[in-house]
Image (cartoon, rainbow over all chains, first blue to last red; front, top):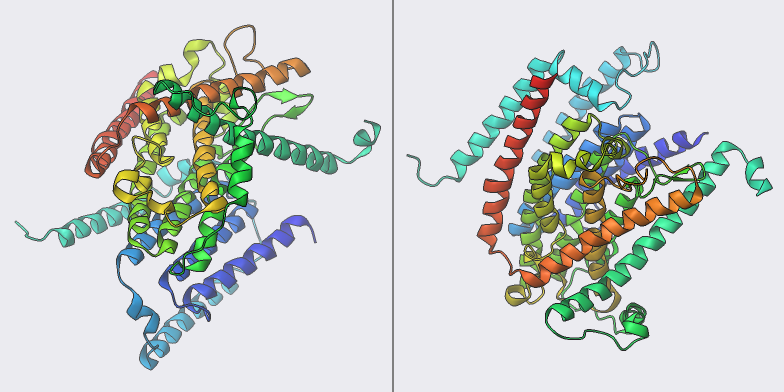
Length: 169
Length: 348
């Protein structure tokens, strides 16, 4: 086994382990601990991206998710008093509902991955971590989805401003 | 040196990289120790005092004494803190600065070894990614302390650092529009055509915004609200003592050094000087060492600037801080991107 292989298993195991600890930590039900494990999950996923030579994605993953989104999460968690959350029992209904939805998503993923035949007919990666190539693809071939996503973000932003305003005029 | 030539390329790479990592780390730590002394001496000079001048000649052994002192002080853990985070927060305080050291080109080359630890093609994005993780140590320290003032400091710093990170990221985009690459070596290569090819002359606005944001990101005066002594009694680090406190302290100075190194690399030509052919890759040992010296000298000038500002200026109020970040820096940075892009488009 070469070094990248070993690193792949290390990062994959870390991602899965930390991911499980986010939602089902047997030692602590502290929301801050969950958030910190989510940060670790994101960082180890960035490690997987690096192994795929997607350096740009890895850097952006850490910059946007670990560095900005999760800090805001922490910010909100710390401001809210979540003592109740630590004591809350898991309800049967939400447990079953959660398991069913996770199960159906896993089925969809497994089916589509098997249909794509992993390993067979793999073409060389088009991007190779080149930021310029990624930018060109985003602004030519995938321009419409890119713009739609940015409109979605704009909608979310307008929604937040609406919600945070007390009196609407 | 015979055995060195007999090794395989991978082994040579591993050995040279290990040596470079050790050297860079040692230089960073020495600089951290001595910049504290410089800060105290400069501040004393500005206030018409002498400063620490008793330990060794000119007080040069003061950092050693400080280090020994902080190790031997009683390490007190208050009863009400959250233990794990209380230990974790100072442990990760130094990490962002050390990780960022990996992509800073601190010289051209010595022998055939390039003087950069990792020549990433997304160097600048890596830097910003790591810098954005720097906020965790302060936020977690505030949370771990489990009391009011540290908590306020933590909350303040998370809002402050996210706000200024955006301006900081936006301010360097024009630089990369000009250079056409995210690699820090290419940025330096772009600045080797005379003094006025330095990006500070081509993008003065970008530099001004980056400088302001760098002060905010390193929590230095006038943006030191997370630890504002007068309001928060020290902010996020109140509950810390001994070497744990010293780690936060060292983290602040290490971040300052790395921010200076980034500014030198991005806007002031890195290890180059436009005279005496010092802007070309060194071919001799002496030239290689001269480049490292030039780089360190430039970084030191920036550090003096950081220190000077701290003892000259009062602190911003919190609303002024947010106003400056979101309503001045961000629109200016965005306008700068658009103007630069349009000029480049018209020229092409």
